[in-house]
Picture (cartoon, rainbow, N blue to C red):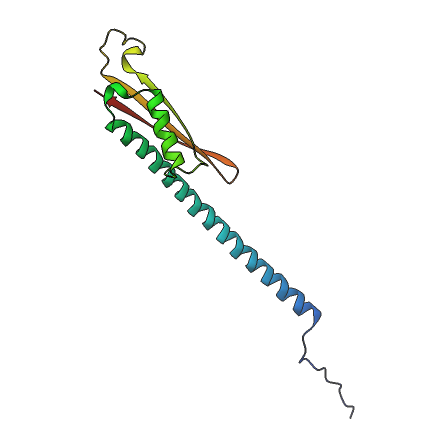
Length: 140
């Protein structure tokens, strides 16, 4: 009888190592992408909340002013005060328009009892500009 030569299958081959490295790289890329997307989602919600809070702070403080003192200069001072004391972070760009209702079309014969305040905040998130805007009536 002839003796058969048996192969020893106890070692790791190069093919096994390559396949395991490819599987590890795939899992790492999936996990990294998931964490990055989670970070962007959380950051987006946080920035949107901060923008909303900034708008609300501005509108509430304008509403507390006496109606006759509400003008573009007083609102500019209010916004600059919020930026300088850190209430509104400097990376937020705040724009506003203040319109007297009796100066709008077809309302010129009305009394000066209402002002329309439109406040818009914009910021950059993930190389995109995000904007959020609120319009509020200021009454006498």
